[in-house]
Image (cartoon, rainbow, N blue to C red):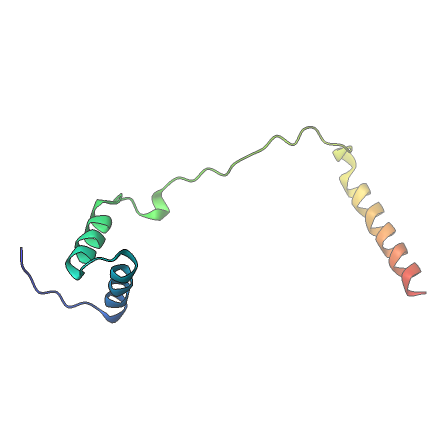
Amino acid sequence: MRTTVTLEADVAALLQERMRERGQTFKQAVNEALRDGLLRDDVPDADRSYATPTFDLGGARIDLDHALRLAASLEDDARLASSLEST
């Protein structure tokens, strides 16, 4: 099928790059690009599900029931170390 299409500058540049990289003619590059675009899934990226990989890190090494107490203790240790460095 013969038709006339007006390409935007960025699309023309991408086609030129594809032609150069793959040693294709303009016709081959256009047909391949159109095929790639038309044959891909019609599902928008936002609708595709994505699963975050998870890993078992084992049990907690500290008693998490007293996490705030631990955080305060660590903060105290950091402040003490900082004050000792400045003297």
